Amino acid sequence: MTLSRLIATSVANMRVILKWGCILVPMSACIGTLCAIFLWLLDQVTACRIAHPGLLWLLPLAGVAVGLAYHAFGRCAEGGNNLIIDQIHEPGGGVPLRMAPLVLVSTVISHLFGASVGREGTAVQIGGSIASGFGHLFRLDPHAVRIILTSGIAAGFGAVFGTPIAGAIFALEVLSIGRINYRPLLPAAFSSIFADWACHGWGIHHTSYRVSFAGAPDWGGSVFHMAPVLLAKVGLAAVCFGLASLLFAESVHRLAHVIRRACPVAWLRPAIGGVATIALVCLVGSRDYLGLGVVAATQDGASIVNFFHTGNYTWSWLYKLLFTVVVLATGYKGGEVTPCSLSARDWAIRCPGFWACLWTCWPVSGLSRFLRVPPIRHWPAPSWGSNCLGRPISSISRQAALWPTYVRAIRASTCHSGSGSRNMPIP
Image (cartoon, rainbow, N blue to C red):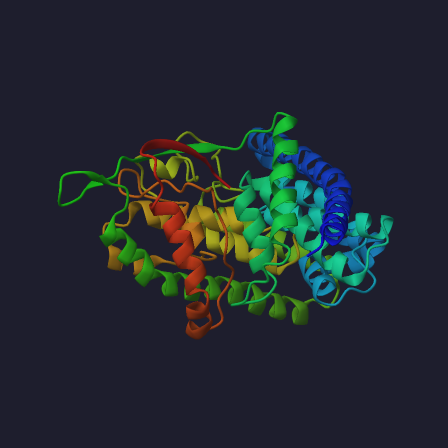
């Protein structure tokens, strides 16, 4: 290669880097800022709901109000995550910018009145909507639109959970089962990390819990930072977790189909979910399964934080599963990662043995979500903060196709060089 051609190639590469830097930096800053506002609002409305339990009785009306808002102003924005994924596969009309404020306000309202929804769906839609807006602003071609939408998903997921590396991998892996396109990896990772910085820059802090693992002695007496037996258990359980996530997804899908047939009017369906949620609260006799589930209204209530302490939460995973399936199937806005993490942590921490673990593994969306829920003193602390790499697996063969990804996740979480205790954010 001649010197002139080398210089020309270097200049062209620098132009590409500068171009994408000028696009991704402000885009990630906007997404991180919106996620910070979103997380702050969630804290405020959760505290308000706990202080005013009577708000639950207004949940059906709140659901109808959100449904009417989407009916009047949403249009194609009601497609949500599916619309974003469709635009990545086949860029067309784009993702409407109004999706971001609509889903943000709708999710906050759902949490205020007690719907058992999460936040990753909102973060993904915020990221996709803002990214699409930047794509239109800079008049990007279809290939570049795919990259920027993937980067927007990564930025939203990484910022809202405080797990930027997991956000980048999630954005790549969520698009197609069993296959990962690594071409957008660098912009996705950059966007996720920068959005997380922006979110933290506004003073947002994620809930943390302590994971203690100092390693295990090997045959020579040296500390070895990996538990082989644990590794084998996780490997055998991975397929079961994939099938368990399929159960959760199918439950939402089938119940939603039944609700659509029973109530053809879309904006009325949330009223059914609200009434069902109130009925479940009366039946269970507890409000612990409303909202995210990270903290409970009472000191010893069922919550992700309290699951790491003593207490009787035998059926909490099932109750949270029911609460979440009902509201998602009837059209409430939000996500399922955090509510399902409550279910996962309940049985994962208190399970006395491996086969009991397999028997009770239900709403978990992939192996890495389980890796984020280690029983204290027995599990290695993940060194990369992943919290959801997978999604429902439709067959054992597809689960097997994802095995190399899971192996890399296990290595990343078990073969780290450090030891001792770490503080990890809870989704």
